[in-house]
Length: 73
Length: 245
Image 1 (cartoon, chains in turn green, blue):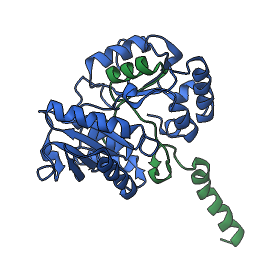
Image 2 (cartoon, chains in turn red, blue; image 1 turned 60 degrees about the horizontal axis):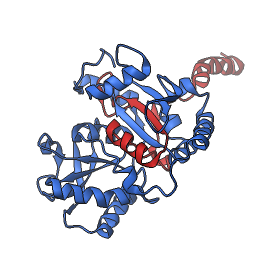
Image 3 (cartoon, each protein chain N blue to C red; image 1 turned 30 degrees about the horizontal axis):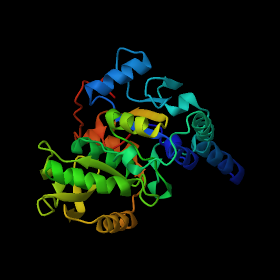
């Protein structure tokens, strides 16, 4: 195999990897996350805070498990 | 949950004008009813997102499965949040006491969420009076610019499994415990504690030191999940969760 063919073969093998790129959401580098949202963990608490402050509510439901394996969103 | 949107710094900045509620699916029957009402479905889904007015009755953004379904990107979400704040700017001079301590009551769930967020958990421990006093002190600190969004908070009760927390036996029986979760968030370790008689200044010093010394690492959740399945690590939800969720 000459150098040109080797180069073409290398590019062909690398293409899917390059096209795929990093998979979002798979790896989170928490050291790069500066400020965080301060979350109320109960609807009762959030509603009381909204009533007292008259602030709108950003509401998220989430399950702290993936395929029932805990410790990950 | 869509971390790329909710950890975006423009979104975080806009969130300071909101009351932010992150409720845990499959764990509370009343909150499950709320999800069904908002989402108009009969069954629970893993994730849901919406923005509501201060009454908590009217959705300002149609409830959807995720932020990604509602907005093209995090910048668009921040723009919409700022627009909502012009319509609902909130009361002027909101005190920390108005916002309350942002707790997730159940320590077991809070520990799991702590691991998901790669944060640290503050547990209040003691009798009703002691916890109430600590709650007041921590409320002020939790909304201070230095510490807002830096910790999760939970209150211990009779159901708290202290065996899951290394160092809990030697820690203050009434007071504040700072806990770092271990992989999968089923166990953790007490890294600092203070007795119930602690002053606000001492508490602040302890919390600031915990933030400074906490160096969360990058997490490959796909690999972690595979290993968890192999080792039979499983979360028990309070309500029935669809298989594979």
